Image (cartoon, rainbow over the protein chains, first blue to last red):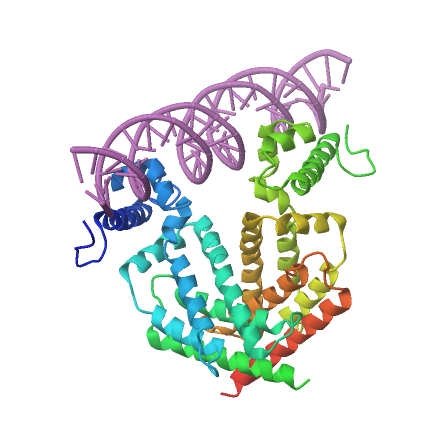
Length: 203
Length: 203
DNA sequence: GAGCAAATGTGCAGAGCGTGCAGTTATAGC
DNA sequence: GCTATAACTGCACGCTCTGCACATTTGCTC
């Protein structure tokens, strides 16, 4: 048959993508409607018209349905950090990343509501930021030419993640930060970090 | 019968405490021997000479056996922060707390090894620090007289937790920080934070 | 000490997540 | 069409965790 669709993908691939999206869509809807815990894999499977077993061939776990795109985010950040030109710091890269990530998105809003109502998911989210933080630590360590026992990369990365989290995850969810506010926050944090680093340099 | 033991506790209480300790002890030993995931509740129950069902009346979940003392830590930190005298900052309190927590302890070492070998437990640990971080955020917000939208408490707390974690959880586990090194790290972080806060103040 | 109330331990049944495996169905390429 | 391969499915199972009813133990009073 060879590839003859405008999409450049065969039927098999397209079906797969569609199923993937369907599972995410119906799952998020169900989670939002009746709560994450109270929604079973069986229900999602039925709504998505696949077998329960199939869900687990698309997602390693129920939580992974909710955080379906974090893997990709991680990959993109890794690339952006790895390929940043000479002179561009990890902080610069992250700032740009945050700006881009502020684009509002219906699915992401839905997810935010879901996560906000479930303790376990909040844990999960936190845990899933750890790899991102590790990327940052590494990149910042390069920027600072830090030795392994140097604590600076870790506290800088932690501050950045905290700011990122605060922007995306204000306690009182429903009124997220505006783009402007978020940028102001980011720049505050960057000033803070520069001030802190400067203070350490002068010791 | 009234209380007539030197311990000030009746038989029932003492038995309970003993069972509690036994479960923790045998569980940690089994986890260390054969891995967390590969150890079942049934095995722990057998080794502790109780029924599997009883384990869950002592601990809400398998993970809670590993982190059996974090609840108490949280409570102690909450009290220390709440009752700190005028003029003593949250940072001071935490510094003292970290110093105390550096006391080496066989059980804690064992746990560190267990957690180091299990992905899920590392997530769990991270998640369980969130409440502590929240306590800190609140206390620091007081110290700084921060308004709700002020980001500073969150980044300061995140830095502190990062430092605390780094001290207790160096990537290459087995050679933990010495007391001196740890204190040096803490004081670096405190300098860093003061420098960062100063930088923000001057804007 | 006998006896009663409350706390504690236990067994059982079951829900739910997640996995391994084998069999069926659908697709791709010829 | 035909075959190799990928995807889907059903089934059995192990494990964590819960609810519930029942048995056992303990604390206390008389």
